[in-house]
Image 1 (cartoon, one colour):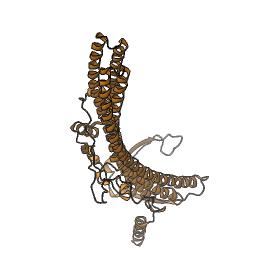
Image 2 (cartoon, helix red, strand yellow):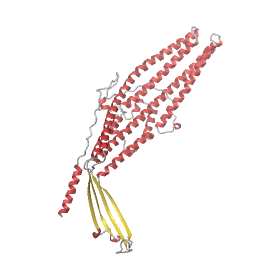
Image 3 (cartoon, one colour):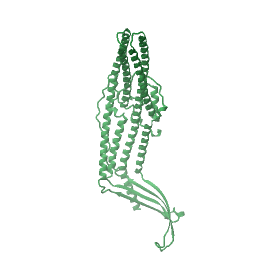
Image 4 (cartoon, helix red, strand yellow):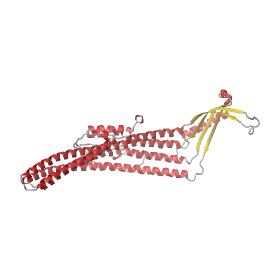
Length: 478
């Protein structure tokens, strides 16, 4: 009785020690980064407060375009790159489950039956006799996590899973922004095509005017040829524009998980750009960028893996045991006389491995240093993204204003040149030059407006696209 009590007490003490044992390696501390006090916010822009929910998760609705809204919702449903990231997240969750299992003992139930006939040469005292043996037992094994190796591995896996969840958000935001950029380029193509159609009609009127003047003998044949050449050039531009529009439409189709032939988007011009986005402060930005979260969680995972590598220097403690029945008669297998058990604790202490464990530890430390440097670089890049697009927003606002003035001046110049041509004071080359200047100014205005839209999209993305950690996806929905 005393021996039994002592054994039970020893096992209990060992169990408590295992539960309260240390976890070797560093406890994770979030890396520091150099954060500016504020961004360079353009005049008239609002600086958001830390608690503001300044950008909605469905940020594309800020552009008030129903077609874009419908396309963006399909990214979540059908994009295959996003589906890959969801699958990677499920893998990460499964790995946490698998690596948690060693915290608990494993049990195996075995049933075996053997029949042996021994030769008279080997066993002369019972020649030719047949022996039966039946056994039913349960085996248990348990590696005690005395040094925290398993717990550190779980810590690393959980951080990796969180990084994977943030990567889902980062990929989603990237795909959504790419779709929006392609969409606005497509609308710019539509707007430019509409402009070219109007220009072609005007050029046809100029050809008619020049033809009449040629018939009256007041215009040279070269004037008529130049007018017709200019018309064909504009028609060529419009045809070529169809190539770029088709490519944008095909790119959008792939982003929403469709074959290019399955999507046709009706033509529609760009509207005037008007987007108001409150700009957050740098200290809040790093909490709202999914790519920053990915880098930070990867650093946390790398930190935990240092503990895993360090634990390899310490002894491992294992408990194995079995309990069950054994008999040569199957019908009487389960009975008090056939009952037996065994227990086998073991300790394994590494002595020499040629530097394998030391190399593994140094590798883990270097990987952590690499992850921290990457985190700091991602944070700096995030700040750069915001500053770049704030600057672009301010500059493009001024640029479109000046360009619109250039368009109006080009129109006035064309009207004056046309009047002078009709009066015979200038030749048709002046008219062609004025027409080309106006068309170029109008196309530039469309392109600047398109860049405004794309810069707006990129600014939303740079500010995190309305993401925060509460929006991490539910695995049950995917």
